[in-house]
Length: 313
Image (cartoon, rainbow, N blue to C red):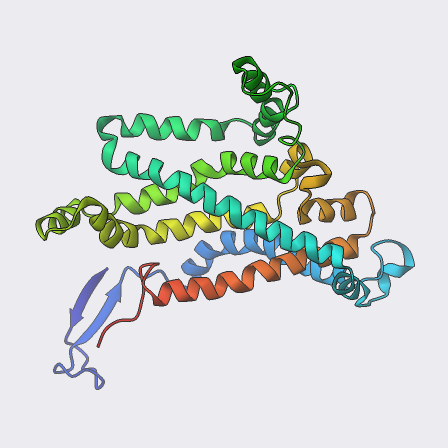
């Protein structure tokens, strides 16, 4: 951005002898509208309009026939009166929280090694970590069916070692199978934002901590970990939010014992044809997830974990 100085016309609002400063390089209003319009239209079509459709649909008596013109709150009343929906939602939140925490706990050492210890092999190892994400999501879930099944690779290997005499049947079609599969899927996505946050840390800070007498674990707790919290927070969001609405993984490896709220929403739309109830469940999940995350983001911003924070006097 350049500053042009002109002394032809004095500016009464200027305190510098009528010197008028003009800022150049700022797009004009029409140019700004042209730049913003594609993104705004994209968000309007793919985000705002579907959200409005869901809201309207949730208040309809039915999505088909004459009842589609009748508006009611029956779907919301049904949700608050049906304890099955509420328990399933709480269960989905708990599973998503566990998957996010475990994924971050496993991804942080990987990201730390890539950022500080990998050396010249950093790019190679980073690509190696991302390669599994290139394959189909469905194929990766199906691979865990082969691993965790009664006659799968894990049971076969344990029986070959003599650790067990009969196949373990509780591994497959269970909540544990859902958690294991989701953690495997989300570890690379959790490691990337943590890796980026660690890359931004100045190496001189660790050297300064060492010169001041801090041990390696003290330097990590007081320097590295606090400075990497923005990446940890981003990793938590990347894992937690999509996991709540997950329905493919519970259907493939969870079975009746590993159902989540996403499976019920899918059934309402696809099998039960109760679109208003499906829309209601979708909106309830969205609100329950969005409102706490907004407060978390504000708290993190005020604490300086997102690069902001309160400025000192």
